[in-house]
Length: 201
Ligand SMILES: O=c1[nH]c(=O)c2ncn([C@@H]3O[C@H](COP(=O)(O)OP(=O)(O)OP(=O)(O)O)[C@@H](O)[C@H]3O)c2[nH]1
Ligand SMILES: [Mg+2]
Image 1 (tube, rainbow, N blue to C red):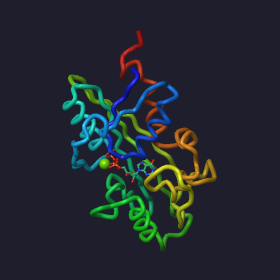
Image 2: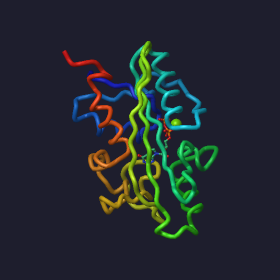
Image 3: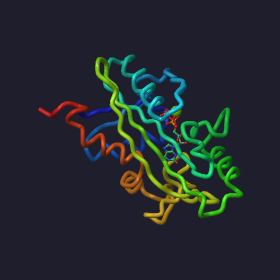
């Protein structure tokens, strides 16, 4: 297993996967490499549903094993929002910057001690003729009042990780991999690598 197809068009996620999988000598291919014209509408209402949709659509199209990641930010003071809508939170033409702006504005009246949140990641692994499998991870943190840090993507600059005493965007890719929701999900997958990918010869 030298290559893994991740059914994503999010370059930030792809970088996270590269940091997570390069230590194993695994090269990451994304939809930009294998199916650039494919746009999958995320019609699900759960991370699991959307992860399955993305992985199964691409696996069926390519006839190969494919991993998809559906993930997002769940903010307690907003009853779990933006959740599965994290990428689209600021509406049509959403960007990471606009999503951050909207979230900070929605939370402007929320006191520091009530700004708890978690990142959630569900990985789905699909292959033709097999049952799709799922691996989940989460990372607890707090939403700051202003961005800090240049690394990562999405909401990373406003997501403070108490155990690291920095935002997710202030961590190196390796540090993020060690504490992130995506890292936890990948490590759970890894424990089952033999079952998922087949035993190495
Ligand atoms: O700061 C962040 N650090 C992270 O580590 C992270 N992981 C997820 N997110 C947010 O949740 C959306 C996923 O939505 P999502 O799973 O549909 O992915 P996406 O639409 O961006 O790409 P694709 O994989 O679907 O092609 C992303 O866009 C981000 O807003 C993150 N934000
Ligand atoms: Mg998406």
